[in-house]
Image (cartoon, helix red, strand yellow):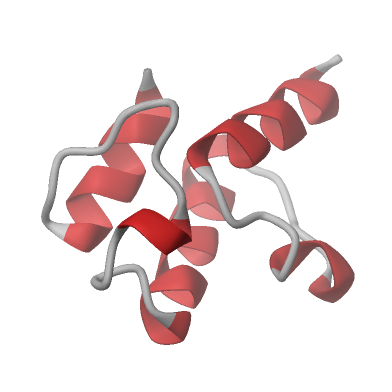
Length: 70
């Protein structure tokens, strides 16, 4: 899935659907912002500032993107 590719590319590690920020030291606050911008570009969506802190896992990010496309 494209979400896994985008996140993996930014973090330079392989991620799976169950990966979260707590699992990876590389997924720090700066990388989190980079991931969000890359996902916005890839999917043509915009995350609100309030959403950003809650999107702490691949699963939550995928669900948010699916909800946006519905």
